[in-house]
Length: 536
Ligand code: ATR
Image 1 (cartoon, protein in one colour):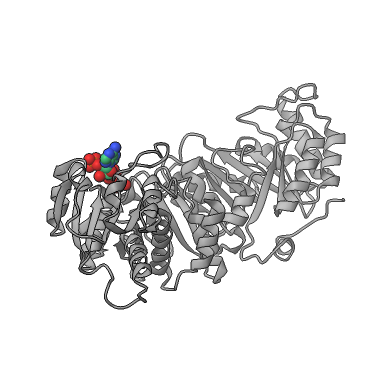
Image 2: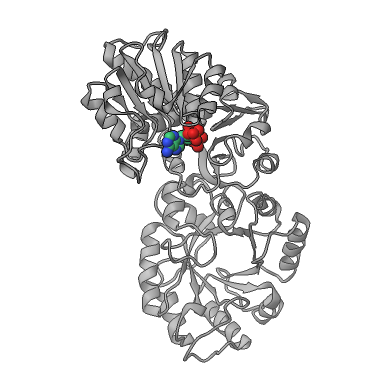
């Protein structure tokens, strides 16, 4: 198919689905032959890319006139040509160039003549290149002048100067790619893309720079790169085009989109973005939920202090405790537990924190008790007055013990390290036991058991924290472990006739609570459940 001149406004109305912003999605082709690149082109178009970056230095052999002609004429999408100058000098084995700079630029000029839409040239050679094409540039052709920094992200001032230098070369579009040493480095690139006088591509490379790539539509970036496949990235930290479009709803991001996310380290494995982005989309909320790989929580909240940024955050290991000191307000139970997992930014910019883990677990157990009693929800918790035994005194143990005590249960804490059990039991006005003592503890029948120790967790799935003979005194048994879902403890409790409550239920319900706190809306429970089931 012949390549056709295109404009940004064409792109806004073409392609699949509704689009909120003009930021383009560019997929780099990494094929080593022209034929492989042609196959990649078809795939990229199918995924929904707007633009193809053809990296000439990837080609093992290169016959400029013939190959460029084929690539440009057969491309189903606009093309951007790039031949790396600084970092992988052209190695066109068997080709004519062998790293010769003039010939490299000749190839880019030829691409222009043959109908390419963009070329990307480095700042160092941009003056020469732009002078050489003066008066010969087709209207539909644009020169991107780029600067790559593989070490760090300079100060806002230094980046501003760099953009000015790029502009002075006569560039149509500026591209600044830096390296993130910290997630807050992205803020300086956002500042540049928002304020730059010429269209600007701002990319912060590396895992900590991921948000710069996803949020480029929010900050007016000209384009962002999305790889064809996870293993075929052309720069560190590049997401796939599919993730940008399907996981992060890239097409729906615009300048007033609110940014949510999960703060953690590591955090890439979290399924929360999948749940929240699908939920936001299902109700048409103008919001996106990201993975925030954070090293220093305080610096993160100080840097990203705008009302529409970090509007709400989930918080996971290792920041559940450290985040406490950045908050303006803390839910009283979360304060007692000493750990938060849910942060909401109020319209006045202040931060309020909650612990939804305990709400998730306690509501799941309450439903378990109701199932037993056949009771319907009422103002009084079915845990009131019950004897509630918590195994473990770590973070999850504290959540369960405080949560149960708040509901009026009589709490018993049993822990391997007795001192920790004692400390927690005292705080919740309960009783402390050792793990040995709890095996024969049955002052009454129909007790409730909540395991928060890691005993029975994958891979040690044959272990259990409480012997089966002891389980007959419990009517409801909860296990915070969710890998495996059906732990030995739960299997044995089911055999003894207890109502069992899965750890996955705590996980999903804490998500419902987070969603409610973030949005003030009821959680799309069915959607969350379906997604959890599908992606577990
Ligand atoms: P979490 O935040 O998930 O609760 P944690 O704070 O590390 O994690 O707490 C783990 C809990 O599991 C603790 O109560 C721990 O007992 P200790 O306080 O004695 O460390 C308990 N635990 C971990 N491994 C255990 C084992 N092999 N046997 C018994 N208890 C164990």
